[in-house]
Length: 181
Image (cartoon, rainbow, N blue to C red; front, side, top):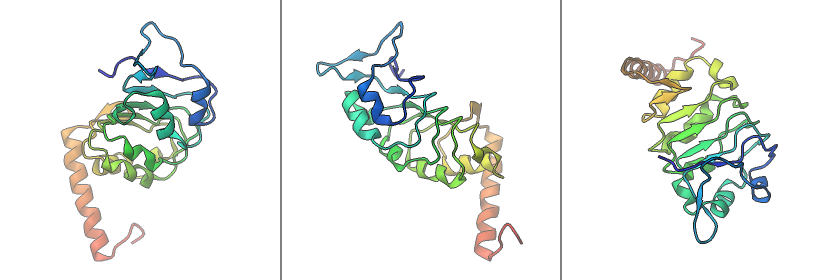
C-alpha cells in the first residue's frame, strides 16, 4: 500500500537531518528510486533513535522523497520527542503516525493533528499523556477520522460515549464549571 519503507531505524540518529549523511537500512525489498535518485515511497521509519524534535523534517523529506507531501506512514516511535511539531500538519496524506515510546506530556499536543483528514491510525502508548484522564476520549474527539489508537480499534460505542463526554465537557465550560468544582 505504501511501497517499501525508507528505513532509518536503529541508526543512533539525533536529528532528522542526520539521515541525509547516512544510508537507509537494507531490506529484501528496497524502495525504488526515481531519475533524481529520490525514493518512490510513502513510508518513512525513524524509530528507535534519539530524535528530540522534528526540526528539518520537510527539508529532509524533500531531499529524500520524490513526492514528500504524499507521505502516508511516519514511524517516530521510541525516540525522545516531547512535543508534536506542527510541521506534521503539512503532511495532508498522512494516514499512520507512530509516536509511541516518546516523552509527550501534554494531551493538548494531539490537537495539532486535527487538521490531518486522512489520519486513521495513531500510537501514543508509552508516553506520559496516556495516564491523562480521558486520554482515549480526547483523541477520538480531536481526531474524528481515527480508526485505531495504540493498535486498538475505535469502536462505535466509544464514539457514542465520546460524543456524550464531549457534550458534557462543553456544557461545563459554558456554565463556568471546571474540573475542580
